[in-house]
Image (cartoon, rainbow, N blue to C red):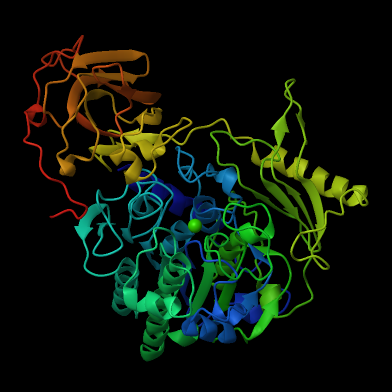
Length: 623
Ligand SMILES: [Ca+2]
């Protein structure tokens, strides 16, 4: 219901503006990229995870083998000064919305700050509304529960892993890169094969099935992100070059990806679709490998260029000449406005992009005004100005490694304010700030204006919705806890991290709810060691004893609709307290006289509260 409402509202918005938008800027050349097309192009948007600018053969890496990327490089327009966020979820948010990531609620990779705010319109919303078939295969990392799942955000087909990678807390328990269990349109489904092969197979099948339609395929693979797992045949050639094991495996994962990319490009050729399909390749942040980095300083997570300056290739044989570089500053959030113009996708008037359409650069027009861009790596509950930030002009970078508040709440810059001239100092070694205070002040002023504008909603939560017909029950995981220490990986769960946090939630329907607190997902049948359990939702606190051997502590209560916070505790003898890492919340039905509100945890235990014999639980789940 809710989704239908949301979509029809969106379509209504489109109807208002559809006649006003498409050709507003078409007066200038080249009209044929924006003008009415015989058939709109298809889109294949491919993004790797943690591959840096130097982890490609065509960028001068003499060790790595990437023949398909090298081919795509030759055939594409290359954005050689292209920037993303220094970590993945923020980059994904910007790519999906054409807007600064922190503006959309995403400034971390977890802690409820990797959830893309509900009122953001995604690239898939726009393309689906314009008649495209939309699909995502790989790592979504913008929310695992309604209303944040890819399937809630315009993707008609989705095959995705959980959280930010295989083996992370929201991913299927015990998953590895081989034969992973993945969420297919919201339901866990066993796959066969290496994860990257599985995602490309699914993408190719989708393209084959929709060859007569328009399609938008988003293929954000989860490699070469750690852990470095790939078949030995991809790693061995690098080991033979005396490359350290970790880097050899990292390169091996990229070579496997490259083989898959080659397969996809070949299939587009065979289907006769390559000519009018826009293929875009980019990566989601700087390298996490320790290999060749094209003389850039820093890697993943850094405010130096090595953290956010990544490759981006755009190929469209029907309209773009290809084979040349665009050296102007460009960014992830330019991709949506560019595709929107290329494909004549209507856009609601109220939707404002931070990015700009890149068509003038892609066809070598002079019509381009230099911009200042802002990169920030917040990674905390609420962003702080200047913290791990960079201000980018065409020539200069101002980098702040840390921003520090003074006690009277006026921030001041203590360390790490540096200015680099990228024309002379690509490696960002020589801080020329002290000799150039005017340049620093100018860029600093622009940053402050930008921060004021993007920070207006930093105090808001992105609540996970409970009790919606779109998803019931909801499986909350501690990945989305607000707090300071989040067990974001299954190894933290296995080591039973002593941590707690709260979920920002919205009760969609008033009524009776059941909460089941667990240490591991239900399928793992893992017995609780706690002797007592507590749930706090809003101002209601319920405590009860836990029977020995049960896999979940079960509570039932009545709730009013609205936004609130949920926190849980599992207490063990000896005083150890943890939050329940996994909590299943189920809407049971409307409140009634026959179901009086319980005053404590004394209700009859449901089936799940019956003692279970602990099962040996190996790393690979059997289904
Ligand atoms: Ca990444």
